[in-house]
Amino acid sequence: MFDLSSKVALVTGGSRGIGRAAVLALAERGAHVVVNYVSNEAAARETVTAVEQAGGKAELLQFDVANGEAAEKAIAETAKRLGRLDILVNSAGIAIDGLLLRLKDEDFDKILSINVKGAVACSRAAIRTMMRAKTGRIIFLSSVVGEMGNAGQTAYSASKAALLGVTKSLAREYASRGITVNAVTPGFVDTDMTSGLTDEQKTAMLTAVPLGRTGTAREIAAAIAYLASDEAGYVTGQALRVNGGMYM
Image (cartoon, rainbow, N blue to C red; front, top):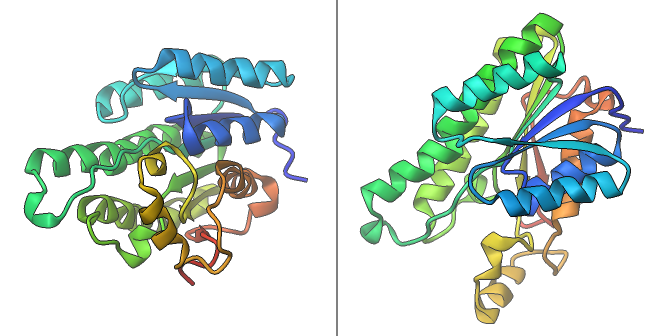
């Protein structure tokens, strides 16, 4: 089930957190995974090494998703070199939290440039290749806060909500070309983004989760692997919620 043998996947922000877990999950199922990173080459290499030690195939690809021109060029060249690009997982993203009255315009712009514009640029490059093949899977990493909002995360919530609109629009645009476009909306997951929270903050957040625990990056990656598979061929334009019941 969920066999991805012979598939080529690209995961942006694949050096850590959910991106890294997605790389491992896709490689575990047979995909050749291209691991994108922007600056932390050591972490990206560790991810590739982990894949290879498990018997999988992976390689590095450095580019900044916020630089749309560079991202599109890197993806196009990689797809040409490898002969195909079947799966794109848009995982790269940042969060700069703070109340609205303290939100700096430059921080808002940075979040939108990476989380939204970067994901769109990567998708545009991937779609060009997928259209020729008449098949493909594009998966966006949104968030539960993009659906329900969260105090102190106006900019981050806006960026993740935007991805849901992008998902639905692209799903309609390219369904006739055999390309599915979906999103995963993780809830409270144990990653670098949440590691800085205090115990009090974590306890408060857990009270809103019916399952009473944080999720794991591996659980999010399992949802990504499903959406990337042939078994999900009739699923498009959807937001798959993996949030422990935090938002229903």
